[in-house]
Image 1: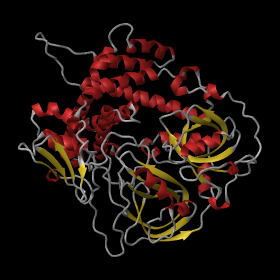
Image 2: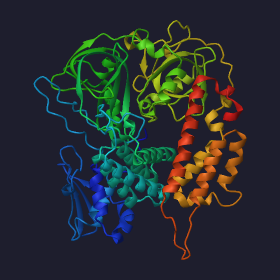
Image 3: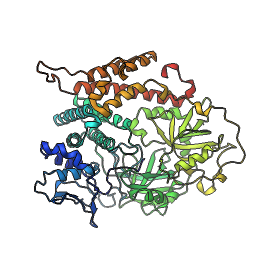
Image 4: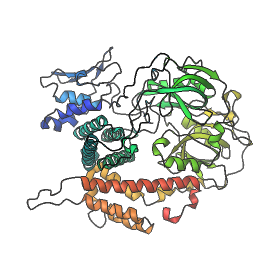
Length: 631
C-alpha cells in the first residue's frame, strides 16, 4: 500500500456525519467556495501537546479541532471557529473537509461479567472500511446476525436516498465531485447506517475516499479502484431500494470481540502493515488444528518505522512471552479467547495464553494449504470476493524469471499455469521487493509459496512467505531456526539460502508471456466506464458522438471476439449518457440520472463478471493456451 498521500496525517479523523452537517449548514454561496478553501488549508496546522489542532484562515479566523479520547472528531462541538459566522462558516467546514474520514464506531456490547472478555486489546489503528486489500489494523468485524424478513420503511427510504445521491455523484464524476457532492454522499451514508444498512454505508465511504484521492491526484491512486467502489455502491443501494431482502446486501454492524473459548493456534507467517494514514505494525497469521484461520494484530500510529520494528515486538495476548517473530514460527494455547468474526484475536481481561512448539508447513494442518491446485482455491474465492481480501493461498512453484514488474513462476503440477508474483507491500524499505529480486536471480529453484491472490490481475499472487519444497533437490536452504519458511516482509534472503549450482533451464520465452485479461477487448468497456467516472456523464456522452468515437470503435472488436453482450451494453451506456431530451423551452425534460446510472451499473456488473471469468481461467491453465475468443 502506498504511503504517499496529500491528505494530512496531522489532522484528527472526522466522523462522516460531522463533516456532512458542516457542509449542509453552509449557504449556497459559501458552498461554491468550499473546494478552494479546503485546498492547502492544512499547511499551517499546529498540533498542541494535548492533541488539539489549530488552523488559521487569515487574521480573524482560527479553527480549533479538539478530538476526543479516541483521537477522533465525533461531535460538532469538537470543531470550533473564532469568526463571526461560526459554526456555519466556511473555515470550519474547510478544516473538517481536509481531515481524513473516520470509520464508523462499532456497536456497543454488553459489559463483560466476571472472568469474561472485555473486548479487543489496545492495538489501535484504522478499521477496514477503506476498501483496501491490505490489512489496515485491527478490525472489529461484523458478527453474524439473523436477517430481517423484509426491509423496513426506514431502510427503503435510506437506500433510495443513497441511490439518488450516488447516481448524481456518478453523473458528476471526479471533475465535479467536490466537497459538496462528497458531503451529500456522507449524509446519505450516515442515514443508511442509522437504518442498519452497514454495507451501503461502507460502500459510500469508499467512494468518498476514492473521490478525494482522485481529485488530489495522490500517488498510488487508481481510477479502477474508484470505478469498483461506484459499482459496489450503486449495486447495493439499487438492489436495496428495489426491496431486495438478501441479508448480504444489508451487511452487519461491526461488533466488539466475542468469547471464543479455548483455542490452539500455530503460526503461519507474519506480515508488515503500512497504511497511507500513518499507521504501521504487524499481523501474524495463525492456523487452528481444524483449519480455521486466526490472526494477531499490533498496528498503531508510527508508519514505516513501526511496521519494521513491530515484527519483533512482544505479543500482547494473555501474558504470552512470545514476540511476533516467535509466534509466526510457534504457537499458543489460549484459554478464554476473544475473537472477532474475521478471526482476529483480542486480549480481554480473562484471556490466558501459553506458548506451544511450532509446526512446519509440511505438517497438518498447514500442509492442507498446499495440498490442492491453486485454481480450486481461487475458484472458491472468486465466488466470495469479500473473503478473498484476507484469504491465503499456498502452492509449490518453479521460478521462471523476472518479466517487467513480475516474478514469473510455474505451478509445480502437470500443465501448471504461469503465475505472476508481485510484492505484497511495495515500499522499498520493506523486504518484499528485494527478496523477490533475489529469487528471480535463481531460475529453476523450487519454492513453497504462501500468499494472497490478487483477483484483479491475471494469475497474480502476492507472497507473504516462502519455504523449501519437500523432497526437491534445487530448493531453498533455510536456517533450522526459521522452521522451514522465510517471512518476505521481515526475513532477508541471502546467497547462502539458495542451492549451489544451476538448475535445468526453463524453456519459456519470458518476454512474450500472454495475458488473457490484457489481451481481451474488454479493456474497451473498462475504459468507457472509467471515462464516465473520471469526467462524468458529459465526458462519456462525448464518446457517443461521431463515427470515430471510442464507443463506436469499440463495438466491432467486441463483437468479433464474440463478446456481443459487452458490445450491446457499451452501446446502450453511450446512448443513455447522450440522451438529454429537452422541452420546447430548452429545459431538460428528464433531469434524473437514474437511467444513466442503471446503464452504467449494468455494463460495469457484466464487465466485472467477464473479467472474473478470465482471471479464474488464468489460474487453471497456461495463458499461452487461452482461446482466441478471450483475446
